[in-house]
Length: 69
Image (cartoon, rainbow, N blue to C red; front, side):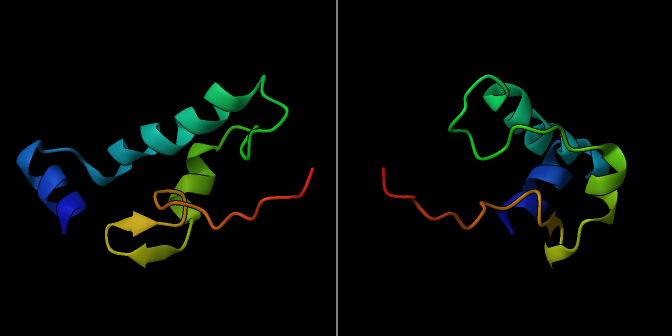
């Protein structure tokens, strides 16, 4: 509901949300411990399955496990 409100209040089109998950790999590209190091294409973002409208799998926090050192 919060994301729906954001989209409505700021009149952001649904594809406008792609910027947020696209920034993750760019920020982690030089970090060998980063979870996301490869860019997400616009096509992959558009085809991603919906988790809960309007959020798709790239918009939500990932499930991650910690590997022992």
